[in-house]
Length: 477
Image (cartoon, rainbow, N blue to C red; front, side, top):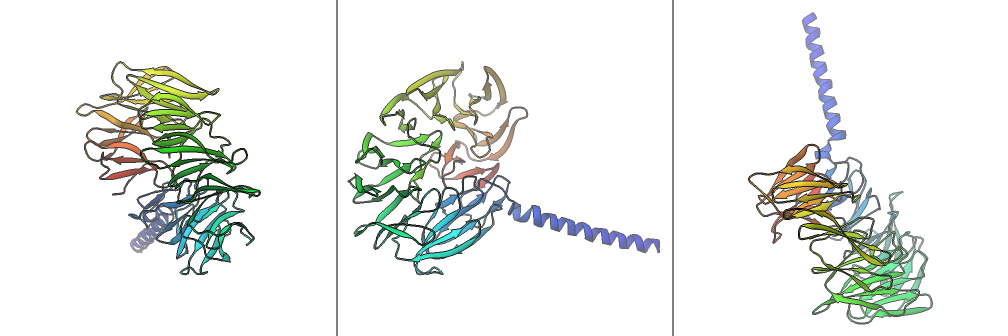
């Protein structure tokens, strides 16, 4: 009798244990950490991830370019092969609608405007998805032009719409205002201000236009192919035009100017307080906390400049592989065996030598708060902070080379890679942990697949690459 009770208890205990394990896996480890609520949603190679460690492989291998998130990255919306999907904070992906030509989420992440086609559940028109209520509805049946035809205002109460019957400012309640008619060409919507007093749109053959209630201004009148950025009010714009043999950068203020001002010719990339200005599929690149482009860093091949208060360029000098400060108009660069900081301050360029080495500096990076430098020398990694240098990691049968150390913008972790292709996570106390072995000659760089910078481990010809998403290595070949 005692033996039978023991056996029954053992069987019962085993069943309970299995149930506990099952529930644990279901709730906490669901499908390789899917469905864990977090923030800072990002994607690389179709693999979605967040800062809680969740991973969703549903779209692995897909080229997803149109994706937008709220400021904290708790939710996201993306379009893939004309279907629109919503991603919530635990990375569950839900279909909103099929057969859609364009999407635009407002900056705060309250509304997603969707240009639907005949294949949509509502037919052809402008639709809206309310993120809080998770409600999808038709605003108005209308004939919207193809992609890049709708752009939301930052507050979500207005949307600029390029339709076959004209350019319109519309709203979530169905109201509309026609601001331009007779659109013989395909027009791209760029930006609309919250107060509906300024709208920017462009045409490949007709340039860039700025609409205000009293005037339509043609701020650039030649063929336009390039990218644009607007300030927090969507009333000032910088735009870069691709030209031969060199492109050209322009500036326009809707309140004080009638035509765009040429800043300089060159092959530019632009950074404002560390944030790179990227080509956007949903309109202009939006800088939410910026009322002026003064202090924007401009890179033209190996030369660096600041934009000053008059929107003219201020020379920094010859700069190779700068590291940009986040939150300040500051950058760092290597000059022989020195590391130099350049700061735009009091309308001047301030240069300071902040570190010197007796041996060649191969590569370096900076912590998020600018308090420490992490420096790759030939055979070792050192950390320099408050005037004190400390060796963190050294290699014997290997060495460090070009682009061999980087600060992860998603986590502030520091990674390095050796010439033999060994990638390590660095820690000041514990040294280094090997996280990935790839190919000899690989290096570390930033990729901007969805507007967010992520670390890419790649080769010179980018024949292959892996991305690091919140400490996880994602193969995106």
